[in-house]
Image 1 (cartoon, one colour):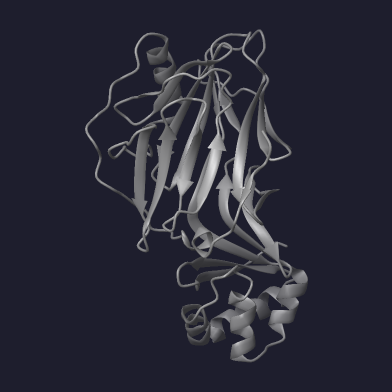
Image 2 (cartoon, helix red, strand yellow):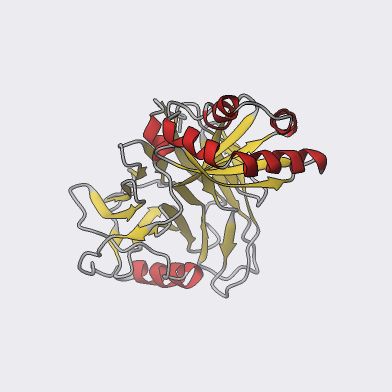
Length: 320
Protein backbone atom coordinates (compact mmCIF):
# COMPACT_ATOMS: atom_id res chain seq x y z
CA UNK A 1 0.00 0.00 0.00
CA UNK A 2 1.28 3.44 -0.82
CA UNK A 3 2.54 5.40 2.19
CA UNK A 4 0.09 8.19 2.86
CA UNK A 5 1.02 11.28 4.86
CA UNK A 6 -1.12 13.70 6.80
CA UNK A 7 -0.28 17.11 8.18
CA UNK A 8 1.57 17.14 11.47
CA UNK A 9 -0.35 18.92 14.22
CA UNK A 10 0.92 19.95 17.59
CA UNK A 11 -1.24 17.42 19.36
CA UNK A 12 0.21 14.50 17.42
CA UNK A 13 3.27 15.32 19.44
CA UNK A 14 1.11 16.46 22.36
CA UNK A 15 -0.80 13.20 22.74
CA UNK A 16 1.76 11.95 25.17
CA UNK A 17 2.13 10.95 28.77
CA UNK A 18 3.43 8.02 30.73
CA UNK A 19 0.44 7.54 33.05
CA UNK A 20 -2.39 5.82 31.16
CA UNK A 21 -5.66 4.81 32.83
CA UNK A 22 -8.32 2.70 31.10
CA UNK A 23 -11.85 4.05 30.89
CA UNK A 24 -14.86 2.03 32.03
CA UNK A 25 -15.57 -1.13 30.04
CA UNK A 26 -18.64 -1.86 28.00
CA UNK A 27 -20.68 -5.06 28.44
CA UNK A 28 -18.86 -8.21 27.29
CA UNK A 29 -19.22 -8.83 23.52
CA UNK A 30 -19.83 -12.18 21.83
CA UNK A 31 -17.18 -14.89 21.58
CA UNK A 32 -16.12 -16.04 18.09
CA UNK A 33 -17.48 -19.45 17.10
CA UNK A 34 -16.02 -22.40 15.17
CA UNK A 35 -12.58 -21.83 13.63
CA UNK A 36 -12.60 -18.32 15.10
CA UNK A 37 -12.74 -19.75 18.61
CA UNK A 38 -9.69 -21.94 17.92
CA UNK A 39 -7.83 -18.90 16.64
CA UNK A 40 -8.93 -16.90 19.66
CA UNK A 41 -7.62 -19.52 22.06
CA UNK A 42 -4.27 -19.70 20.26
CA UNK A 43 -3.88 -15.92 20.15
CA UNK A 44 -4.82 -15.25 23.76
CA UNK A 45 -2.58 -18.11 24.90
CA UNK A 46 0.32 -16.50 23.04
CA UNK A 47 -0.30 -12.90 24.13
CA UNK A 48 -2.08 -13.23 27.44
CA UNK A 49 -5.06 -11.01 28.23
CA UNK A 50 -3.82 -8.82 31.07
CA UNK A 51 -2.98 -5.78 28.93
CA UNK A 52 -5.93 -5.93 26.51
CA UNK A 53 -7.99 -2.74 26.76
CA UNK A 54 -11.64 -3.55 27.35
CA UNK A 55 -13.89 -1.83 24.81
CA UNK A 56 -16.19 1.09 25.39
CA UNK A 57 -19.36 1.29 23.29
CA UNK A 58 -18.32 0.85 19.65
CA UNK A 59 -20.00 3.02 17.02
CA UNK A 60 -21.00 2.27 13.45
CA UNK A 61 -18.16 0.71 11.44
CA UNK A 62 -16.23 -0.27 14.57
CA UNK A 63 -15.74 -3.71 16.07
CA UNK A 64 -14.27 -2.21 19.24
CA UNK A 65 -13.21 1.17 20.59
CA UNK A 66 -11.11 1.90 23.65
CA UNK A 67 -9.87 5.06 25.32
CA UNK A 68 -6.97 5.71 27.67
CA UNK A 69 -6.76 8.87 29.77
CA UNK A 70 -3.43 10.71 29.59
CA UNK A 71 -4.17 13.54 31.99
CA UNK A 72 -4.36 15.97 29.04
CA UNK A 73 -7.07 14.05 27.18
CA UNK A 74 -7.98 10.64 25.84
CA UNK A 75 -5.98 8.57 23.37
CA UNK A 76 -8.35 6.22 21.57
CA UNK A 77 -7.83 3.00 19.64
CA UNK A 78 -10.52 2.04 17.14
CA UNK A 79 -10.66 -1.47 15.69
CA UNK A 80 -12.65 -1.64 12.43
CA UNK A 81 -15.71 -3.81 11.92
CA UNK A 82 -14.18 -5.46 8.83
CA UNK A 83 -10.69 -6.65 7.98
CA UNK A 84 -10.40 -4.33 4.97
CA UNK A 85 -10.32 -1.18 7.11
CA UNK A 86 -7.49 0.25 9.24
CA UNK A 87 -6.86 0.30 12.96
CA UNK A 88 -6.71 3.91 14.18
CA UNK A 89 -4.88 5.36 17.17
CA UNK A 90 -6.11 8.91 17.75
CA UNK A 91 -4.53 11.68 19.82
CA UNK A 92 -6.57 14.11 21.97
CA UNK A 93 -6.84 16.66 19.12
CA UNK A 94 -7.73 14.02 16.52
CA UNK A 95 -4.25 13.39 15.10
CA UNK A 96 -4.20 9.83 13.73
CA UNK A 97 -1.87 6.93 13.18
CA UNK A 98 -3.41 4.21 10.99
CA UNK A 99 -2.37 0.58 10.58
CA UNK A 100 -3.76 -1.45 7.66
CA UNK A 101 -4.35 -5.15 8.21
CA UNK A 102 -2.87 -7.80 5.84
CA UNK A 103 -6.26 -9.03 4.71
CA UNK A 104 -6.97 -10.64 1.34
CA UNK A 105 -10.70 -10.79 2.02
CA UNK A 106 -13.20 -8.49 3.67
CA UNK A 107 -14.67 -10.33 6.64
CA UNK A 108 -16.59 -9.19 9.69
CA UNK A 109 -14.74 -8.98 13.00
CA UNK A 110 -16.10 -10.58 16.16
CA UNK A 111 -15.05 -9.22 19.56
CA UNK A 112 -14.33 -11.65 22.38
CA UNK A 113 -15.17 -11.09 26.02
CA UNK A 114 -11.51 -10.18 26.63
CA UNK A 115 -11.44 -7.56 23.89
CA UNK A 116 -9.68 -9.48 21.08
CA UNK A 117 -11.27 -8.86 17.67
CA UNK A 118 -11.00 -11.86 15.32
CA UNK A 119 -11.45 -11.77 11.52
CA UNK A 120 -11.84 -15.45 10.58
CA UNK A 121 -10.69 -16.36 7.05
CA UNK A 122 -9.39 -12.89 6.22
CA UNK A 123 -6.40 -14.35 4.38
CA UNK A 124 -5.29 -17.57 2.70
CA UNK A 125 -5.13 -20.14 5.52
CA UNK A 126 -4.82 -17.12 7.80
CA UNK A 127 -7.03 -15.49 10.41
CA UNK A 128 -6.35 -11.94 11.58
CA UNK A 129 -6.96 -10.39 14.98
CA UNK A 130 -6.48 -7.05 16.75
CA UNK A 131 -5.99 -6.35 20.44
CA UNK A 132 -6.13 -2.75 21.72
CA UNK A 133 -3.72 -2.45 24.63
CA UNK A 134 -3.83 -0.47 27.85
CA UNK A 135 -0.69 1.54 26.99
CA UNK A 136 -2.37 3.35 24.11
CA UNK A 137 -1.36 0.90 21.42
CA UNK A 138 -2.56 -2.13 19.50
CA UNK A 139 -1.39 -5.59 18.48
CA UNK A 140 -2.24 -6.66 14.92
CA UNK A 141 -2.01 -10.45 14.87
CA UNK A 142 -1.93 -13.13 12.19
CA UNK A 143 -2.80 -16.77 12.96
CA UNK A 144 -1.38 -19.12 10.31
CA UNK A 145 -3.55 -22.23 10.21
CA UNK A 146 -1.36 -24.58 8.15
CA UNK A 147 1.74 -24.73 5.97
CA UNK A 148 -0.07 -23.23 2.98
CA UNK A 149 -0.35 -19.88 4.78
CA UNK A 150 1.75 -17.02 3.33
CA UNK A 151 5.18 -16.46 4.81
CA UNK A 152 4.95 -12.68 4.45
CA UNK A 153 2.33 -10.36 5.90
CA UNK A 154 2.11 -6.70 4.91
CA UNK A 155 0.91 -3.95 7.25
CA UNK A 156 0.42 -0.52 5.69
CA UNK A 157 1.34 2.42 7.94
CA UNK A 158 -0.17 5.88 7.64
CA UNK A 159 2.08 8.24 9.62
CA UNK A 160 1.84 12.01 10.12
CA UNK A 161 3.89 14.15 7.77
CA UNK A 162 7.51 14.37 8.82
CA UNK A 163 7.43 11.13 10.80
CA UNK A 164 9.11 7.91 9.75
CA UNK A 165 10.46 4.61 11.05
CA UNK A 166 14.03 4.01 12.15
CA UNK A 167 15.59 0.87 13.66
CA UNK A 168 15.43 0.77 17.46
CA UNK A 169 17.97 -0.73 19.83
CA UNK A 170 15.56 -3.51 20.85
CA UNK A 171 15.18 -4.78 17.28
CA UNK A 172 11.89 -3.04 16.55
CA UNK A 173 11.32 0.41 15.08
CA UNK A 174 10.94 3.85 16.59
CA UNK A 175 8.35 6.21 15.09
CA UNK A 176 9.69 9.74 15.09
CA UNK A 177 11.39 12.60 13.33
CA UNK A 178 14.82 14.26 13.25
CA UNK A 179 15.40 17.99 13.60
CA UNK A 180 18.68 19.90 14.06
CA UNK A 181 20.60 16.74 14.88
CA UNK A 182 18.08 15.64 17.52
CA UNK A 183 16.20 12.37 17.11
CA UNK A 184 12.71 12.56 18.62
CA UNK A 185 10.55 9.49 19.12
CA UNK A 186 6.77 9.53 19.62
CA UNK A 187 5.89 5.87 19.15
CA UNK A 188 7.32 2.40 18.82
CA UNK A 189 6.88 -0.92 17.01
CA UNK A 190 7.97 -3.81 19.21
CA UNK A 191 10.39 -6.44 17.86
CA UNK A 192 8.84 -9.14 15.69
CA UNK A 193 7.81 -12.37 17.39
CA UNK A 194 6.01 -15.57 16.43
CA UNK A 195 5.04 -18.73 18.34
CA UNK A 196 3.66 -22.06 17.23
CA UNK A 197 0.87 -24.08 18.85
CA UNK A 198 3.38 -25.72 21.24
CA UNK A 199 4.66 -22.36 22.44
CA UNK A 200 7.93 -22.62 20.52
CA UNK A 201 9.50 -19.57 18.93
CA UNK A 202 9.24 -19.40 15.14
CA UNK A 203 11.82 -17.46 13.12
CA UNK A 204 10.42 -14.08 12.11
CA UNK A 205 11.66 -10.63 11.13
CA UNK A 206 10.53 -7.27 9.76
CA UNK A 207 11.51 -5.37 6.67
CA UNK A 208 10.33 -2.04 5.32
CA UNK A 209 8.90 -1.76 1.82
CA UNK A 210 8.03 1.83 1.06
CA UNK A 211 5.52 2.83 3.71
CA UNK A 212 4.65 -0.77 4.60
CA UNK A 213 5.90 -2.94 7.43
CA UNK A 214 6.34 -6.52 6.19
CA UNK A 215 6.66 -9.40 8.65
CA UNK A 216 8.06 -12.71 7.43
CA UNK A 217 7.33 -15.93 9.36
CA UNK A 218 9.54 -18.92 8.49
CA UNK A 219 7.38 -21.94 9.35
CA UNK A 220 8.59 -25.38 8.25
CA UNK A 221 7.77 -29.10 8.51
CA UNK A 222 8.48 -29.10 12.25
CA UNK A 223 6.13 -26.20 13.00
CA UNK A 224 2.99 -26.92 15.02
CA UNK A 225 0.04 -24.92 13.73
CA UNK A 226 -1.55 -22.49 14.28
CA UNK A 227 1.33 -20.02 14.39
CA UNK A 228 0.63 -16.63 15.96
CA UNK A 229 2.71 -13.55 15.05
CA UNK A 230 2.28 -9.80 15.36
CA UNK A 231 3.59 -6.31 15.20
CA UNK A 232 2.62 -4.20 18.22
CA UNK A 233 2.37 -0.45 17.64
CA UNK A 234 2.36 2.05 20.52
CA UNK A 235 1.53 5.70 19.89
CA UNK A 236 0.91 8.53 22.32
CA UNK A 237 2.96 7.35 25.31
CA UNK A 238 5.74 9.92 25.27
CA UNK A 239 8.22 12.01 23.33
CA UNK A 240 11.82 10.86 23.66
CA UNK A 241 14.55 13.08 22.23
CA UNK A 242 18.11 11.85 21.77
CA UNK A 243 20.85 14.44 21.32
CA UNK A 244 23.68 13.25 19.10
CA UNK A 245 27.35 13.56 20.02
CA UNK A 246 27.80 17.00 18.44
CA UNK A 247 24.63 18.39 20.05
CA UNK A 248 25.60 16.94 23.43
CA UNK A 249 29.02 18.57 23.21
CA UNK A 250 27.47 21.90 22.21
CA UNK A 251 25.02 21.81 25.12
CA UNK A 252 27.79 20.84 27.55
CA UNK A 253 29.67 24.08 26.89
CA UNK A 254 27.02 26.05 28.72
CA UNK A 255 24.73 28.79 27.46
CA UNK A 256 22.14 31.26 28.66
CA UNK A 257 18.79 30.09 30.01
CA UNK A 258 17.05 31.37 26.91
CA UNK A 259 19.38 29.42 24.60
CA UNK A 260 18.95 26.27 26.69
CA UNK A 261 15.18 26.66 26.51
CA UNK A 262 15.35 27.06 22.73
CA UNK A 263 17.67 24.07 22.33
CA UNK A 264 15.56 21.81 24.56
CA UNK A 265 12.14 22.86 23.33
CA UNK A 266 12.53 24.56 19.96
CA UNK A 267 12.92 21.41 17.86
CA UNK A 268 9.44 20.13 18.84
CA UNK A 269 7.18 20.97 15.88
CA UNK A 270 4.71 23.70 16.77
CA UNK A 271 4.72 23.14 20.52
CA UNK A 272 7.32 25.55 21.89
CA UNK A 273 5.74 27.12 24.98
CA UNK A 274 6.25 28.84 28.30
CA UNK A 275 5.71 25.58 30.20
CA UNK A 276 8.80 24.02 28.66
CA UNK A 277 10.94 27.12 29.21
CA UNK A 278 9.80 27.41 32.83
CA UNK A 279 10.76 23.81 33.55
CA UNK A 280 14.13 24.29 31.87
CA UNK A 281 14.79 27.35 34.04
CA UNK A 282 13.87 25.47 37.23
CA UNK A 283 15.98 22.42 36.34
CA UNK A 284 18.82 24.11 34.48
CA UNK A 285 21.55 23.01 36.90
CA UNK A 286 20.65 19.33 36.68
CA UNK A 287 20.19 19.44 32.92
CA UNK A 288 23.51 21.22 32.39
CA UNK A 289 25.37 18.73 34.57
CA UNK A 290 23.85 15.84 32.66
CA UNK A 291 25.16 17.21 29.35
CA UNK A 292 28.58 17.92 30.88
CA UNK A 293 28.87 14.43 32.38
CA UNK A 294 27.77 12.85 29.10
CA UNK A 295 30.32 14.86 27.15
CA UNK A 296 33.17 13.86 29.50
CA UNK A 297 32.18 10.18 29.18
CA UNK A 298 31.85 10.34 25.39
CA UNK A 299 28.13 9.66 25.61
CA UNK A 300 24.91 11.35 24.49
CA UNK A 301 21.80 12.57 26.29
CA UNK A 302 18.23 11.30 26.07
CA UNK A 303 15.26 13.30 27.37
CA UNK A 304 11.63 12.43 27.95
CA UNK A 305 8.90 15.04 27.44
CA UNK A 306 5.28 15.28 28.52
CA UNK A 307 3.03 17.41 26.33
CA UNK A 308 1.20 19.76 26.39
CA UNK A 309 2.84 21.96 27.40
CA UNK A 310 6.24 20.64 26.29
CA UNK A 311 7.80 19.86 29.68
CA UNK A 312 11.02 17.86 30.04
CA UNK A 313 10.34 15.18 32.65
CA UNK A 314 13.49 13.03 32.69
CA UNK A 315 17.00 13.25 31.31
CA UNK A 316 19.94 10.87 31.41
CA UNK A 317 23.13 9.87 29.62
CA UNK A 318 22.94 7.15 26.99
CA UNK A 319 25.08 5.49 24.35
CA UNK A 320 25.48 7.44 21.13
